[in-house]
Length: 200
Ligand code: SF4
Ligand code: SF4
Image (cartoon, rainbow, N blue to C red):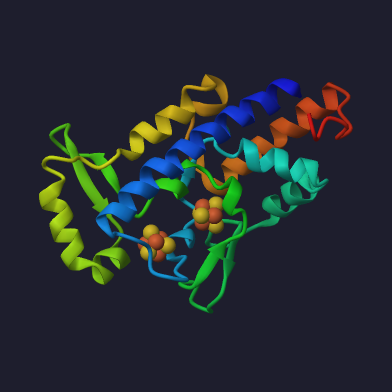
């Protein structure tokens, strides 16, 4: 169990870096999310590795909620991330219910670099941000020739390299959490952990 906790701390340290790098880029370019928007969380196909979900799985375990959430995930048939909290009927307004533990993609999505067909970097900006900040978007397209955006693939890879087994496979986000919870509960059971090392 101790190893999983150490691994989780390493993942969180990478998340701090991602928040800093991608947040700074989005602030600098002015390509910020629309206030109250959570539209992109309305998609259960957002990908994450079980490794990316480890901090959340351990947090749920420490709260004594791991088994309950695992059962709820098994029953879940919604069309969103399980932890998305809707504030409007159409789901466009809302917020993340697990913001501190959200996976890598959720920390980078919005305005970031992705691979172009020619192997270079192109700017990926969500439709809502483009609508809200079209002029800044155009300016960023010009400035990125000298200052390329941070790439999402690099961010994903920074996490992945921490543990090949848990990081090798991208899954739909709810499945990735399920996998991580199963792993935490399995290790806890066989190591005799009774949530006694929650502050280790
Ligand atoms: S990335 Fe786009 S869709 Fe997602 S919350 Fe931000 S503005 Fe909304
Ligand atoms: S973890 Fe949070 S930010 Fe990521 S998709 Fe789910 S609700 Fe949205």
